[in-house]
Length: 115
Length: 111
Image (cartoon, rainbow over all chains, first blue to last red; front, side):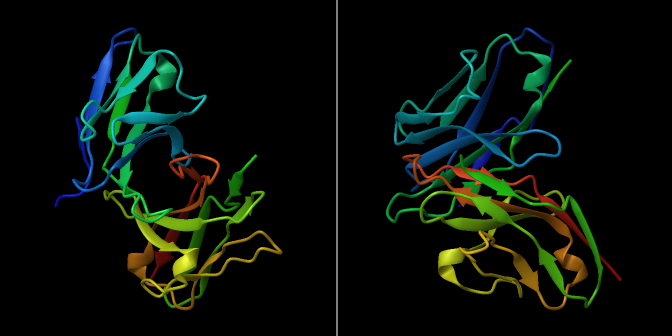
């Protein structure tokens, strides 16, 4: 198992464009999280899926952001009409709910740069 | 509101010296705390969690509810310990136990 996989590793786009990121969690993990990390900050929670259901969304997740996990496996995070402030590292993490508070395993992240 | 504070942005120590990375938290309830580490060009990974009460790579961390602290300690720092360290608190009000992270402390161990 290669762990949590994210694609692409880097994305450079012009302001106003739409972007989509993909996350493949560890195969037996039913919980999936998205975080955003900006320079000098720790990761900040964006949203959480339990299987295919999106159960939590942070106030950081504006209406330009949408996340899906259609079959309870991989997930996508889309940002519409990107803005300069969206430039950040977007991290995906997964865990199992077999036991409460199982550690989250992180991917390498997708670094988004808005020109 | 839950908050995790790591007061030191950068900590520099000599090899063989003791190291303590500070973490304070605010939380109403029973906290679940973690230390995550990110080595250069690697992904964020779990170092240890307080309920395990174990030592990983020589690091330990004790939860002090009175002082609301979860400081990370190692008696003799090694050069390979140089990394970014994040303290994190599990949000038990969040159905998925999402993590609240501190801003991180960059540890530099010099020879």
